[in-house]
Amino acid sequence: MTVDPLVEFKKVGFSYGARPILKSVDMQISRGQVIAIMGGSGSGKTTLLRLIGGEIRPTTGSVSVADKIIHELSRNELFKLRRKMGMLFQFGALFTDLSVFDNVAFQMREHTNLPESMIRDLVLMKLHAVGLRGAQHLMPAQLSGGMARRVALARSIALDPMLMMFDEPFTGLDPISLGVIGGLIRRLTDTLGMTSILVTHDIQESLRIVDYVYFLADGVIAAHGTPDEVRVSSVPFVHQFVHGEIDGPVPFHYHAPGYAQDLAISSSI
Ligand SMILES: Nc1ncnc2c1ncn2[C@@H]1O[C@H](COP(=O)(O)OP(=O)(O)OP(=O)(O)O)[C@@H](O)[C@H]1O
Image (cartoon, rainbow, N blue to C red; front, top):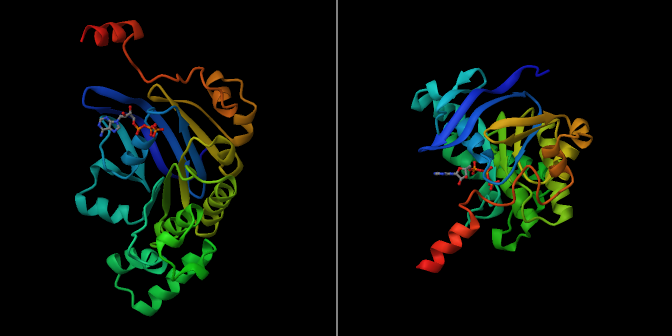
């Protein structure tokens, strides 16, 4: 049962033009939880995050955050709510001409009137939380991939978001850095009182750190459960994910016309 939901999807449908992506998504995310959204490539996971951020509007149904229906908010109200949301993308690029310290300070300087002395303390606190206080003077080019991701993480929590969204936070990381980032997502969520949503393909790391998993397929939540439920699930779709099978209910091929038809077209050109 979901207690005290921070994010709620109610029968959400969404189309890009005439192309339906989501048909009817129902999902509840409790405050304080770390949840993962998984699904095949192109199933609409990032689209769910964009709906939460109010970048796009649902075609049907509603998405609410902290009891506010996103598509009913005015521009100002939406901007205010977005300040409480943090986003970390796969390639959460740092500003290459700013030091680690200035990267983390950037949003505080842009969006608050805090004095520089307080910004300094807050930046050091965020860097300390990701284990990189000692790297404050380095430039992004001097960081390893795993360190850069940690700085991006510190930057994304600079304004103390209530909700963090991570889009493929583990991509391209070596196994150790991956475990470090996973552990940090869990720890920061707990210690900062946040709620975190992860869009990821990395099921093993997700199962280690999340409270709940939603599987998206064919525009609906096709399965959901706790990590323990997911590990022993016999639902073919979930089984395919957990055991990393290449083909199964989640198709390997992007939707395409018949191969013979395609070949016939190209050979007649
Ligand atoms: N701006 C857009 N205009 C039209 N179609 C789009 C747009 N953005 C995404 N799509 C399509 O919508 C579908 C869902 O995209 P989305 O990025 O949400 O998928 P995803 O599950 O996050 O995929 P992946 O795991 O590969 O990143 C895809 O088929 C994509 O091609």
